[in-house]
Image (cartoon, rainbow, N blue to C red; front, top):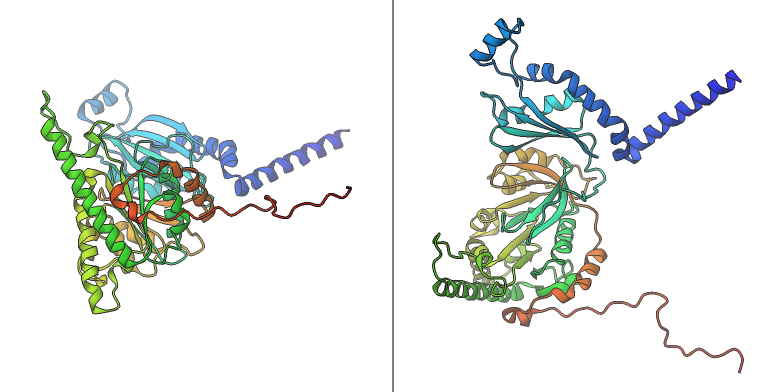
Length: 459
């Protein structure tokens, strides 16, 4: 009997170890919650002071503290590490809030993030400054970008906020058009650029906004979403006409905003509405998002007579990028390259695009076009994206920060179904009514109604 019990115990231990090994590969969240989190938390607690010391993240104590330690506590004076304010676990990693002592800054902690990652045995360590003197270490226990699962909690929300992708620290990457009005997305073929746009359209379709599509590839990318589009241009000539109509709409909105300012009495604080979000809800025009699928098609010309149209389109895009934010018109521009070789006005337009997302690119120069002027250190990360991970990208902004992101896999059919579901949200824009695309008919599912009249088997 004792031999049998020993055998059962050994079998149970082997089965448990095998189950944990399987969970680590197939269900990393389960493995992290059961094994990774307790082990990492314990390692962090035991080795925190020594790790901070060897990583150069300690400072000498103040004279008063050194005097008290030496004369009251009767101990040797030790360097002071950042003070731990809070430690919390999550299904993807561990978060630690630190109060920095005098003499340290967030950049010092960020520079040591790779050393901290190896010291505590986690997949990555991201440093985020929450307020002056306080940083948050966001440790990720495993590669959350291998299988993208968007978080259900702690997702920012707002009138123009769309969750698009997952960051490498387990948080959601969102497009907040009020904070970052215009954005540029670059990427080579099969890099996941179209997947990013699908997720963006899928999220925007649920919001009360007008979507304007400019797809000069005969509409093969954006035509399936026609049910939710207020306008669609499928060639350069139509794109020029749509941009002219958008500029006219922008000027009309500026006139309405100025009229509201002239008829509104000045408040005690002297504040007046400087954009549409300061208008009353019943007088606020609907926001407009312009989705340009391949910006190079608007710059390239085949004959000399097309140059005038090209110059006009570029001028209109620059005007929209410079002024349209205040009246709720936002640009979302995609392309494979966006350099000065496209022609006059390319760099001027690119400078107005605050948000940058760079997928896998074919050369360093393309990464420099997207990230070189806002986050130079992110260019190496963009050029090292493997080809077997479509959707992986580097997102940066003008604050100098950047992060790795990956969009969840979404098919054209899923996005098109969401567009048809929310087709009733298409606003009435008279200036763009002439460019409203025809909604394609929904194909009948197999097993639908038959046109053949059944013949009864028995009269």
